[in-house]
Length: 135
Image (tube, rainbow, N blue to C red; front, side, top):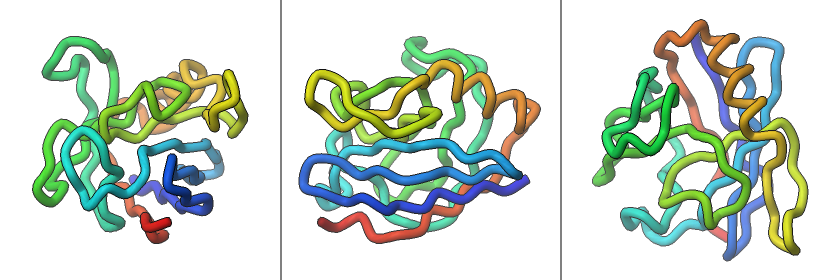
């Protein structure tokens, strides 16, 4: 199975986009490009295997997707959250884009993760990320 993430709103504070999986569309939020530095930057555009994990290595996240072979990075997940304060370089998934406390956000994140897991049948998939990450 394949999914596609198209980045379409890139700023110095965040990167927003849409993830297309089958006929469903999800909103995504990532931290801004900071030269691919761990814990503070979005990852480079490209193709990644997204492997289903029952539990993340830290134990903080359950039933998430772990992106493999990210250049010079590790521990990159697709997980729930709302604002860039909820990620350390991972992709946050939501049902739609919005605002929370004056910050750009993705909303209904828990619902989005449940829907993605169901749609992908908790199987691994290939994620292709398009769009520049530079503001």
